[in-house]
Amino acid sequence: MYGEAVGYAIVHSECDGPPPVLVHGWPDTERLWAPTVAALRPHYRCLRFTWPGFAPGAPRTLQSLDESVDLLARIVERAGGGAPVTLLLHDCGCLFGSQFALHHPGRVARVIGVDVGDAGSREHRRELGVTAKATIVAYQTALAAAWKLGGTAGDAIARRIARAARAPAPADRVHAGQGWPYYVAWTGARGGYRRAQRFAPAIPMLYVYGARKPFMFHSTAWAHAIAARPQCRVLGLPCGHWVMQAQQAAFNQAVLAWLNETGARTSPGRVAGSDGAGVG
Image (cartoon, rainbow, N blue to C red; front, side):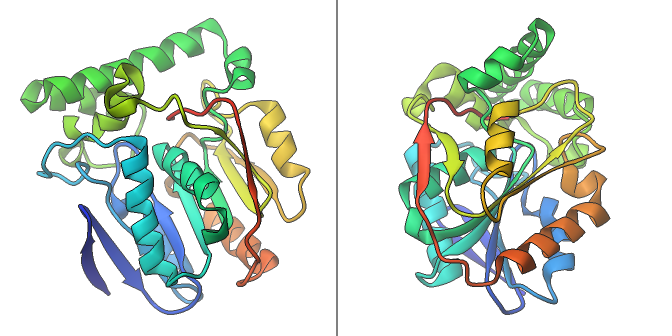
């Protein structure tokens, strides 16, 4: 195993074979994927990295959507050497990964999305109740405020929200600096995410979500549309947002089975975009 800097990110590679690129979200680092990498290791070389500003002690940062997609492009280039890769995405990693796939359709062969689909689309907003909408606004704006505040007070806010959300990350690895995607989303800093498009892929996609949450991060119509496409599958597991941790065995089994079903060299296809995309 080796680690190498790519921009501000650290890439880790294990074993040989077609390279899934594992993309985490808040409040995690590449450590989130350790159980998944262990399950995939006999079959695939995995590349995982930590977003800028997410590692404990990392310098504070603020990245635009284009900069995040750009960084992912450099990592994908390292992963695939120009060949299309499989993206395995979670949380706000779903936002950045889907936008990368939209802008570089020839570089993505397959996508595995975890728990965040068309969050923020008109269809998704229509399905959310008042309490769900208020909860989303409350925790996301609090994380944006924590990033702005920084320091011990900001860290305390971020850790309180992580604890309430039952995030698996250890408390001492959660900090205010990880909230920059929410600050960008809610303040429009660095251009915001208004230009982000809903992900409606024509390439194979596996979407796995936690079915035991107060609300979903996808609309029913979006999930049905994905499930209806060839080589695509939608799977709900009895857990919350961090599916790969709460349902390790079932999640890893589903991922491996789907990767085998769709083939190691699936041809890349076009990816359609439409209105609305958001962070989880």
